[in-house]
Amino acid sequence: MLTGEPFIPSTITVHLGAPDEDAPNVTVSFPDYIKNVASSEIFPTWEETALRANIYAITTFALNRIYTEWYRARGYDFDITSVTQYDQKFIEDRQIYDNIAVLADELFDDYVRRQGRIEPLFTAFCNGTTSTCDGLSQWGTVDLARQGFTPYEILQYYYGDDIEIVRNAPVRSNTMSYPGSTLSAGSSGMGVQTIQIQLNRISRNYPAMPKIPGASGTFDSATEETVRSFQQIFDLPVTGAVDKATWYRIAYIYTSVKRLAELDSEGVTLDELPLQFEGNLTPSSVNEQVRGLQYFLAVIGAYYEAVSPLQITGEYDAQTERSVKSFQRVYGLPVTGIVDEATWDDIYRAYAGIAASIPPEDAEWIPLLYPGFVLQEGMTNEYVRVLQEYLTYIHRTVQEIPEVRNTGYFGPVTRQAVTAFQRYAGFTPNGAVGAVTWDGIAGLYSDLRFGYEKRPYQAPGYVIR
Image (cartoon, rainbow, N blue to C red; front, side, top):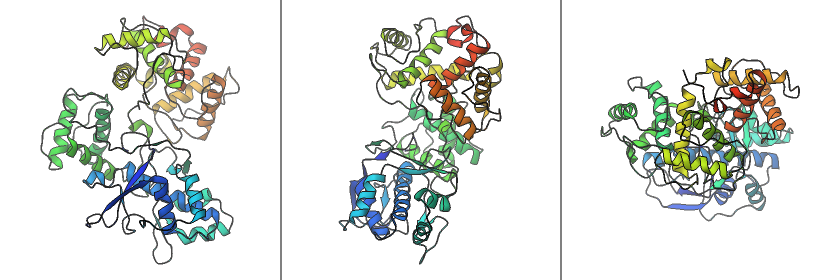
């Protein structure tokens, strides 16, 4: 879905015909869909490495259709068709080959993407004999398998060296991205932030649309103006509010300008996604999301006297509950001490407003706050340069953390340094920099260079300039 990171849908709805053909829809489990298509598209007698490469491509193609809401954004009530002219072959109630079924059960929750990108790659493919294309050749995979290519090397041969395979992606129910009610002036939350991010990208192709300063998740006057402009350009009722029709037209145009359903897609990066709510946090929770929550509250507490201070421990203790309740009082939320989605959204918006007021160039004299999006391999921006500066400084004292060049590009060396720090700090060593890892790196940098009292959330007298 365009509102977050991809997941594996528990089911997929297939239209048994061309998009506009009067044909029935069938809804099947996603693994069963992969088994059916693989049994219809490829031969079970092929080398296993070729079968695996093809199943990766089949799975990823379907996920791209679901993630971009390719058909649903156009008003259709299905996810994909059964016609190879448009999608990939699905035959209702067909025989499933045993070896393909085994491989599909193993691989259905893995997919291909470009490094530094989020969306499943549009893994175009053709049979390579009666039809050819820019993507994978199904019969060509057989020749490569016989030459000793691994499944990953086969995929690289057709899609480029900059791909990676995401493994064991989460499985959950597939729901439409529209939040269920019209967004308008005064609305807030991740739905608003999503359309702000998408409209700002669309404005690059349609410069008559004004950009929305920031993407705070609050539907302000600037957002309303841009929505009106979008509606006028694309012949929608000019209301300034985002109803279902406007939501999906935004999604459709965003997919189009970024070519997300093309092999040469511009791609979606993590900084284009709103920070995701992963589930309620309650007293006694112990995980890295709690640590991230505590970081946000600690920063907010440095600037809002009514928000109780707390220590960052990763454990939802009594101190954390007091801080959450104090925040809920300040923001007029039910004072439950439980971080539900509404509380999470308001905490993040409050934090983001503070972080946005400290530009990257201030990193020389104050530890910079987490920018609000995950930094990972493939990105290039000023926050990556600041991250590299912090890691290089830390290297002087902690030799096991490699030195990196301050280029602003998040390459393999930066990933190695981040992973080394995460192991050193006891964090999950995934090589990506979220709020927890950023706070750890910036905090250690601050301790070594300025002293403990210089951290923003431990320096109550600090004033944002």
